[in-house]
Image 1 (cartoon, rainbow, N blue to C red):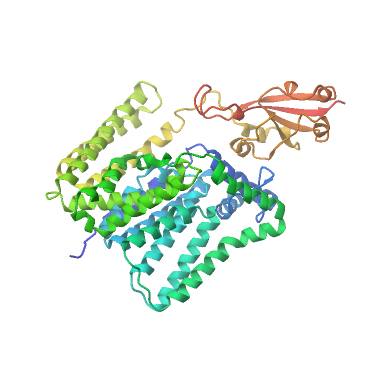
Image 2 (cartoon, rainbow, N blue to C red; image 1 turned 180 degrees about the vertical axis):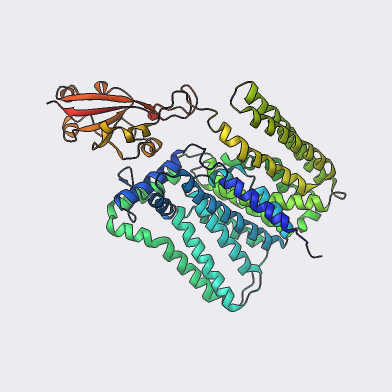
Length: 549
């Protein structure tokens, strides 16, 4: 029976996608990863070092430069425009969504299943967050998602010889772009698990043009992936070797966690955590579900990703971002199973209702929470609180009905509505919920005429400058060996950035020969003192130091 999917479903998908990545794009504070990328992009433009990038004056070769090149182009056209920078990441997020939809569609051979899975994907917190942050991750995984979609078509769908060769070429191009975005990360975290899932799915068919296409794909992938590394190694062999060895060592020595660290991987799916477990374990209990090759493919892809990432010594929860794709696919296909077997599969109906009632209760809680933020904490405007509370109550009522009656697609749409309300109405209100009342950005120094023409130096015995502070300062803040009098005197006059008075840091020999002019203290912490994420490294004193006249 041919599926009939109304155009309004595709319009709805586009609306959810646009709001997920672009609504209130500028309200979130920059984290350290985004700051590193934007500082590097700014220096590309300012110092014309596009091929050999620097970050705060030091060579920045740890990451391939493709996303930073994009950020630098935006910086050249529209300087200091954080909304434009994040819009580029949003475009890549939308591209990932498109490729994900096409991947599920070709595997499940169902537009409806692809739509459901994609809406689940768009309500994954990590996907939304990375699509709103100008960093590398969204680029490498978006390109690789396109590559795996094309590879599945090549493995399991017949095509003409000419089209087959060009599909291989397109896959090679996308894999090369993925490598140029963050090295081999997505090859290990997305491509390899996908190939493992294909091995369990069935034997891929060959066909004329496969040998030529495969050769072109590999060659194109290698050329795009390594040309920049080769050029860097030619011009900076010693530094390149040091950085590459350091980066390799960090994979086995930095943030080392036990193999079971990712046991709670399903929690990364947020609102879909229980549904992820249901999709994972239901085939063990339902023999009929084991015949659903698409669902088994998604579950295998999911497990292979978790297991492979668990093998890596270095582990962070944000490294589970590529896992959102197979998890969303598995959840979407499981929800389709529930919809198609509502009166025949009591086990799946029970799991669906447990998940549905839980999310319904949470939504009711959100309604009360926004009222408390208004009346109890005065953090939200009255009209925003009232409108959001009413909307959340309405969404909860719809969820309750869909949970009882099994209207799966309406339930998924209701979850999307929760995210839309949060993204459009609440994000701008609560983005500074944990704001620091003493916040005073160092960006004010850009406009201080007393500081023009001076180089900035950072005084700290053990730490290097935080990139969030360097980004806000709008200039390089170089570290200084301030314990060495000769090193200090050779750089005068200068501006120092320190979290303690310079009189407590500089040697007496230096203090006897200089005049100091205290400019002010700047606190770039977005969290208040005493909070978990507050750091003294973002609390700095600005002082001009000159030789005595």
